Image 1 (cartoon, rainbow, N blue to C red):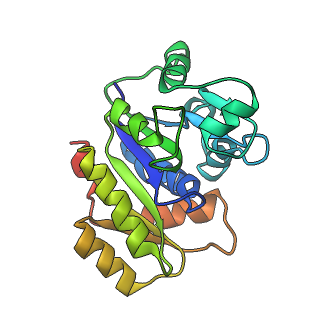
Image 2 (cartoon, helix red, strand yellow; image 1 turned 90 degrees about the vertical axis):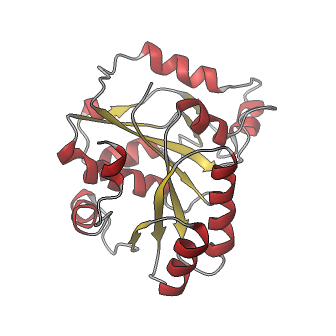
Image 3 (cartoon, rainbow, N blue to C red; image 1 turned 135 degrees about the horizontal axis):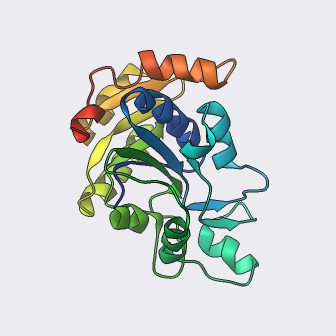
Length: 226
């Protein structure tokens, strides 16, 4: 059983990986141990999310758990696996984690990142939302701040609630929009934990400063770990 957060998104490319790295910065000072894990990673030779979090999160080797399902094509796991003439399942990722010595304790906080959005297929029966249900982690949802985000965000929140998955909050990514933030908080009945800008110079230091000063200023996330 893992203790922590699952970072999902309203779509692919919304900023889940950078949000994950920001959460590592934000939670590290208060956790005895922190771990980042991406169970399913596709297109990993073109865009290695684990390597990105290692760099942007300023992570030491023990904070990165680089095991799981790794597929070459930048597609949904179902289709990326087909190109390699195989099938993959949630069990494969969990088995890989079990075989990795992580020194997991009751005080370890895990940041687990999904692949794409909630309904991305892993195989003919399983989707990313099933990974969240299996791990029994509350979700942090990364969403765009721009036009169209209200619909995509509320649909994502509705899907999580239909599965009775707790929602830790939303992180908006992009230029701030007070109207979109109000709509997501009001109609989605969630906390917006922060609005992450497009950094002119994105690196571990600039992300750390933002995470420590702007992310979850009201301490909603820590209510989950008390």
